[in-house]
Every structure is written in structure tokens, then in C-alpha cells.
Image (cartoon, rainbow, N blue to C red; front, side):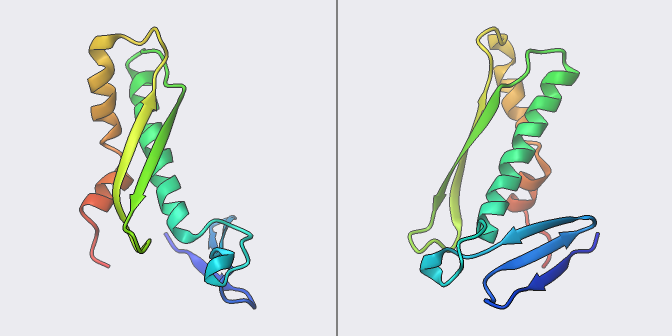
Length: 124
């Protein structure tokens, strides 16, 4: 898979083209950006959130269980904002979800490819 990176005049606003899609990134105004889009780190967290939620949803769907209604991810960052130090995930399950299958959903969610890649990064 190839990505094309396009810089704009202000040098903080960047777009990444992935096939027919384009993702806009920026820095906060406080860091000299324009504030027109999330910063790249926010996309990383969003990728982990969507992957974790989709993995849990897929497990429930394949197992004919009630489907999750959403998920929440909380990110604790280093004081200087340089990196995440802890991500906490909460899968929102409906009230009728079988109690004895909750741990299985959490285990399935831990199988998210992006979470695994963050835990054991590829050589970059």
C-alpha cells in the first residue's frame, strides 16, 4: 500500500492520499497550525478506537450475540504530549448482553491489529 503526502503553504496542514481517499491533518493553532483538522496523533487514536470497536462488533456478530452499541477510548499522554502512555477502552454492550460472554468480547477486542502493532511496532 502506498500513501502520497501533500504539503500546503502553511507547512502544518498536510493531506495524505490513500488511493481515492484523502485525509487532512494539521497542528493545533497553539503549535502554529491552522486548526482545520485533527493532528496526526488524533488519527492514530481514532484508528485504534475504530479497530477495537470493529473487532468487538465482528466477534459479537459472528457469535450471534447482541451487538455493541459503541465504544469509548481514553488516552493518557505523557505530560509533554509526546506520546501516549495508556489507552483505556470501554466497549458499550446492551443490557441484554450475556454476562458470561463479556470477557470474551474484551479478549476479541484485544485482537485489533492496530493495538497489536502499537504494542509490538514494526521496524520503521
